[in-house]
Image (cartoon, rainbow over all chains, first blue to last red; front, side, top):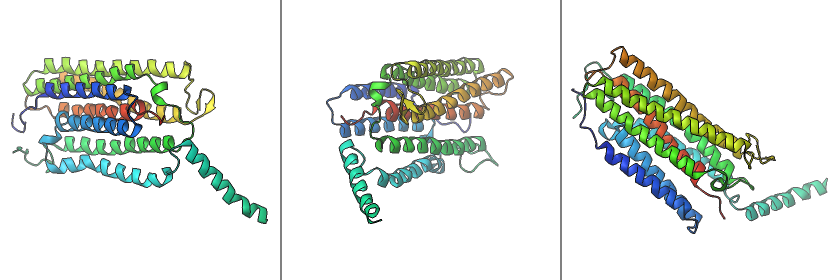
Length: 116
Length: 203
C-alpha cells in the first residue's frame, strides 16, 4: 500500500456538505435579504462546498502543489473572462437604467440622421 | 511524504491521474465559459425571468443532495479497493452509478415539466416570447447531464473491469481516476445549482 495517504474523514466532509447545502436553501428562501448580500452569501457557500469536494474527495490537499496549480488554472482564466465581460454589463443591471441608456443612444443616433 | 513510483509522472502518483486532471481543467474552462456567458446574457437582459420563481428549488436541492451522497459512495468504493475488497468496491460503485441514474431521471422529469408546464420554457422562447433563458438553462444543465451520463457509463465500465480482476489493493489507480471525474461532476453541479437556481433577480 505504498503511495497512499492517510484517508481523510469522508463522513465529516459529507456532513459539512449536507449542512452547507441546507444553509444555502435557507439563505435562498430569506427573501428579506438584499440581493447583493444574498448573492454573496450563496456564492461563498457554493465555493466553500466546491473547495471541500476538491480538497478532500479529489484529494487535492494531499497531492503535490503542481497538481493544485493545474486545478487552479481554469479558475484564473474564468476570472479573467468575467473581468473581460464586465464592461459590457455596467449600466444594464436595472431596467430603468437600461431604458435610459437606450434612449440616450437613440438621441445620439438621431442628429446625424437629421443632418443627412 | 508521498512515495512516487519509479519512472512515473513527476507531478502525481500516475500519468493517468495527471491526464484526468488536465482533462478536468479543460472541462472546467468550458463550464466556466458557459456560466460566464449565461451571467452576461442574464445581467444584460431587460426581461430575464426570475429563476427562483420558474425553477423548482426543492427538487434540485434533492438532486444536489443525491450527488453529494453519490460522491460519498464513490470515496467509500475507493477505500474498499485500497483495503483489498473488490466486491465491496463494486457495490459502492454501482450505488454511485445508481445515484447518477436517479439524478438523470429527475432531470428528465424537471425538463419535461419546464418544457410543457405553465412557463413553456423552450430553447429560444419563454412562454411564447423570445428569450435566451431556455437556451442558457438547457445548454448548461444539459452539458452537465451529459457529463453525468458519461460518468454512469464510466463507473459501470470500471465495475466490469473489476469483475475481470483488474483492480486490487496494489492497483487501484483506475478507481481513483473515475472518482476524480465523478467528484468533478458533483463540484460543477454545486456551482450550477447556485448560479442557475438559487440567485434571484433584483426585486
